Length: 337
Image (cartoon, rainbow, N blue to C red):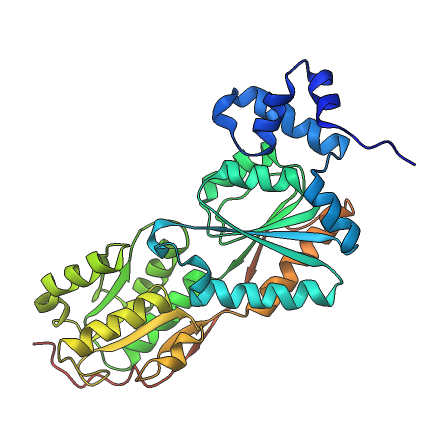
């Protein structure tokens, strides 16, 4: 029987105290230098060290584990797992991992070091990362040795990383073109940022709609966003069509408009992005850009399996989108005044 690796053995090999190694293992990297933290993480992975909790889980559940890590960004206000897009993505990943005889372990984190600690503490087949910035992945690649697939990453060029993106630009283009063909002459795009996938959605929308498209940056926090809409109501009323870069933002914008006496779609048409279950829970039902989460999950896990086997993978895979037209949009009937 192979002798179990102890934390003290790794500490001795690196010339460190057991406490220092333990700090890194449990994500308390502020207690040691970054250089030391990287050395410890590599040693833990190379030696296959597993904490007691991981040993027990693996003994009881022989299936291999895929970690799914989600960025618990402040805009979700501590309710990240309740977000319709995240829930839909997790549902698809759960079905795909189960179909492959894998276990799925989910973590919502606030900092990159938490991902590194998670990957170090469990004997993972790979990671699926959702909601992080492109700049994060290079740093993670230096600290996490297991392969990972990422959702919505631009410009990834790191070894054993596969970005599984959707065609955000074409999705935005489809909405813009549809609004233009419906006779709208002024249309607004709502987003809380102008980078990465949201920027692509806005650019596509602008290309599809033409010169009458405008962009409005909105607050991330809901209470602040509703107050912002109230301040901007007169300006908002000058548009006859609005594209929100997510269903979440589209739905709460619809609620704001309805509370302000604006008829949808008679006065303002509203479209979202992602085609989550929210689309059918709001009235009128929401027009949205559909992405296939089942295909995305399958693509991500295929990439991880290939990377585990040492096979080459495309660094970026881009999946198609389609526009699903529902009752929240229609031909222009208002003059925008």
